[in-house]
Image 1: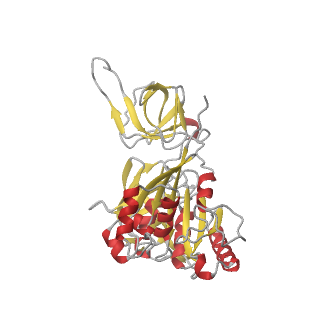
Image 2: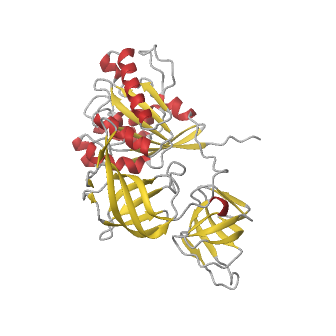
Image 3: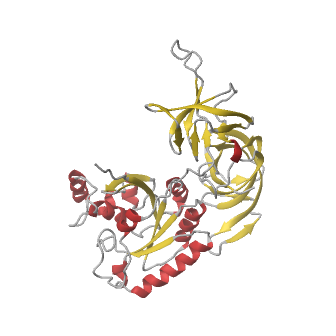
Length: 417
């Protein structure tokens, strides 16, 4: 008897206010038969029109319904026979761009929505910039409200060309463009009879077929230590295991590993996972690793493949998305959190801020404010083992935190060194 593997696609949606993003998500859930009867009944009752307002399926907060905008990141789950989906519905208003960083940071794909009447606007460029900087592998431009421009191919083509050129200038490798009408359901789940000039997939068809790249077998292993397990029981008197979620690559029994930042080396003696021992484990599995040698290891240490260990550094250069209300200024003392390790640091320099309209770098801005994207140079009190974000979104990223109250200042993406 053969079995079919069902994989999971994580994707995020983003769009300016009134572009119809909540309606699109509601339509996607409704037409894929991914909502319950009582949910649809509640939305129908709450709708001000004769037909159900599908936007209410995702605008869950009372403030969102009253203001007509998405504020928080809402996660939705649905499935087709061959793929599961985790959807992060992110805010469209410029005030909540920082929330998009949360939703898109782990996404395999991002759907950026634009209103066909307005085309590419500043917030569209901001969403494209965040998506590209976060290195989301696949970007979909959904040109919505095509019914309000008489389903004209020329309108769609002009918007698609402008957005694609902008996204590729930011470094995005793959951009797919789809004309849709979320309100009518055109090209969302079912093909549109009103746009016979379009021969590409519907949005759901694309989501169901886009490759999910998770082949980590050839990547260097990275295991941030979350907890040291020492039972000290009669059954396990000498057990010393290092528990955590593998952030990258594959670990095998017999592998030579290095523990950073100390730099001590050892060999993987055993791997325990839920259900019993294993000979091999890979990202993103949660495991407990036992080593041949007794080494002083604590939470925050990083177990890595010895032959491909990252360099230790106290000078971090990165691009950051500033997410706090307080500005980030030169000389500010912060905490830098990388995987499970947190160290004290200071902002030495802010060389530039990205200007979204022209993609130019505004030199020496002096500070970054909420929703700014800029370059920073940070000096840490202790060495950190950062990968390049281009190589690993997990071990190349970090947070800058206010040490006084724990507020997150910025999400950072480390450059190659």
